[in-house]
Length: 293
Length: 298
Ligand SMILES: Nc1nc2c(ncn2[C@@H]2O[C@H](COP(=O)(O)OP(=O)(O)OP(=O)(O)O)[C@@H](O)[C@H]2O)c(=O)[nH]1
Ligand SMILES: Nc1nc2c(ncn2[C@@H]2O[C@H](COP(=O)(O)OP(=O)(O)OP(=O)(O)O)[C@@H](O)[C@H]2O)c(=O)[nH]1
Ligand SMILES: [K+]
Ligand SMILES: [Mg+2]
Ligand SMILES: [Mg+2]
Image (cartoon, rainbow over all chains, first blue to last red):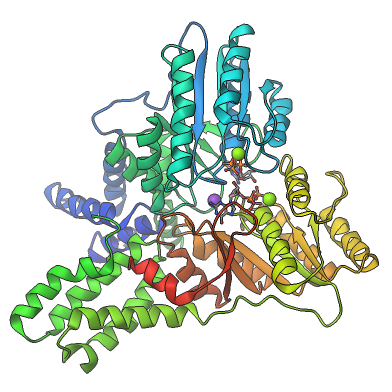
């Protein structure tokens, strides 16, 4: 037979593939149960057809009640927009800011960056290098200074230069460090106070290599700063970042961009269909290999 | 709910058994099901869990559990023993070369914590082992990577060898060792750029460095929050470089850290140190038994 049968083996393999993509064991088991019912109800026999249903249903989980355009940035059309970038250590915040600055600049926006990571060795210099690459100005103070004060400076500078967008870098912090999370909340309050309606976006950067802890990251960072969107980085490796499905499902936070490398152009708008397909693409390819034999 | 400890997870199953007074094979099956879920929620790799569950099942249907008065406790004991065994004994030793300097190479994915751990390790070697290390900046790619290492070097008052970003990392490593010999440094810690295990060019660069400098220790630095992909990463780095050990970073977070188990299972290499914070004195020996408890949420 050219196509595999849709049997218990098929579902078991699907379970494995999705768990291996970090979707999370509970989410996967619920999903596969539902899929089995649907397959029975619609009397589906061929794997090709099931795959369409899998895609459809996973994309449904992703969108929930909302329709499209959830991946777009919500910037104000007049005056200064502020984007606050947060996340745990080493996920790709500073790099993503460089890429985003480049992207917004290409769209004709006047962008300014604020070097709010005053803690990590070399963090300010790293953002400055990205500022050079993207050809945007970086507002900074010395290492060790108060991050809220740097962000305040950044806002005043962006205002006086009539910039369209200010992107604020922050130091990486693990979500269980209460003091550091409070510090972040304070940074956000400064932004709220200085610019009405700001921050327009609070972007949580998640490393696609991360497992189930990403859900806890999303929860805690949201409590501290009302996260409005996710940048999912390092999708150019073999990790699939499946945990963002659970995050979307439980916390309703959409992914806005994906990081696909270390260069300035390696930031793309999130495409739920491509992402979902990627989650079980290995299984599809395997089947095609079998077909070709 | 996710992230319950294994003990809580087993509660319901145990209640049923307590009523009956005797454990059946079906009961054991239900208990191992809970163990499986707990391990998967802790990010232990799917295949590693599968093998582990098979071993646990075999022991659990034996008399040590079936005839126990506290079968739940007994299952937990079996699981913990299997996990600890798999994770290996304590081995936070660092190689010492017959002839100085001892060369240590730090490798791993982007953002795992290589540069920070290089600084921490240098600090530890000096403080605890009375050594005289030198740091080497071989990351010529990441913006300000050299500045980052130099800043750490300044904080530690420790020399950092660098040749800027235009030099070739292999040349930098070779020259660094010559310099270390001149200056009678007994340890050389080479910080390399983060790279994907599937990036052939950059993986080849590591092979070239290894071939030139013959490191006594190649440490794979892994983020404790890593999910299912940890096996692919660890396997590739180990197959390419034959690593000598692992450093697990960011264990000061609240992740269960099942990646530790996955890495140990696929490479067999010891996890030598745990990163417990961003500061330069926050590197600790790795304790396999504590890690087993942590993965199980106990
Ligand atoms: N392959 C790949 N690497 C990435 C991507 N995004 C970032 N990186 C790399 O990940 C590493 C960490 O990135 P940073 O931007 O410094 O991360 P960060 O979140 O700012 O880190 P801290 O400020 O230390 O918390 C760097 O080596 C980046 O080049 C991506 O999409 N793909
Ligand atoms: N909380 C915590 N943070 C850590 C630990 N180890 C490293 N970090 C942080 O993780 C981030 C990344 O660390 P780096 O040392 O720059 O990682 P790297 O592997 O050198 O990164 P690349 O060179 O970009 O590949 C930084 O913010 C560090 O401060 C740790 O054990 N605990
Ligand atoms: K990471
Ligand atoms: Mg940063
Ligand atoms: Mg580094």
